[in-house]
Length: 445
Image (cartoon, rainbow, N blue to C red; front, side, top):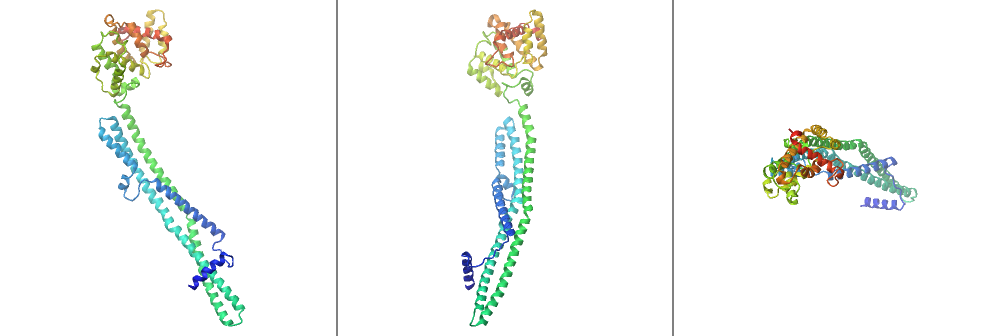
């Protein structure tokens, strides 16, 4: 109790400046202590943020894998794929995408467990053990300094008493000698604690390069994860693109002609062949065919049916004009017209030739220049239109009438749009198509 009293009194005297206080740390050691605090703060911050960025925890790989968001995403995709079935394009794509996500999830789980082992656990160790040990050594040093200062104050007081003692000088000297010996012991303890703290602090600071290595390991693990994920995506992406690009389950309206023919493994466009086959069998004598407008609602329905690959033209028996309407729309929505942008100026120039024989010969040369896909489909269309014109006395659709409604859909310049047709060339375009219809057996023997 008496020793505790002396320590409390010493603290009070030091606070008011009545007693000397030993500086327990040199300026250099104070800087070392600040470095320790900064490293502690940095490790706490990094540990907190890295921990927050990780989705799982624990050493059981499979259990940890199941908790990842990517695993949930993968399982959801695979479940949807099973529901859609193998015949579904989306189902096949979801299946491969789900497998890729599952592989990425495994890579992520490996990354997180690597970071936990090589970064988080060592970092936690210094935060929970090494740094507390340094603070404990500092606490012991502070206590030893107080004990030493207390003993020193008592020794100086006893020495002063001895020097001024007139009564019992031997007793005063004996007390002073005892306190001197105690002071020497406390000083030795203080120095030992100071050495201990210095060793702990300097050893810790000397490990800064080791601490920095943890960040390198973190980046290396991160790099390996992203590299693995990138390779997985690089492997699956071409497969997905090939599946989608080669699938026949895709929109036909607005699709480039050659791409459509390649995907569907056919030489004549699906819409063109289906519509013209039906019209040839059922509507050659229909009055105003291609000129009269069909129901807009039925045209939209038929267009959607073609895009979905679920067409039944018998549903439109009562409205063959809807069939011709959707055919004209298909031709107009091709990214490039059947008679091509590249040859447009040549067609217009050929139409200006005065001699009819030379003009037809120029047309023949341009037909021959068309890409095979365009030429085959133009032949299919023009030959049908020629057959249609043969029934003009009944259907009122002469080659001229047919050309007027068909030409804007198969020959126009790259500058023209569906809303801004070159009116100056409209008559010329019609005359070109009319010539093709009238002489279809010569152009397309």
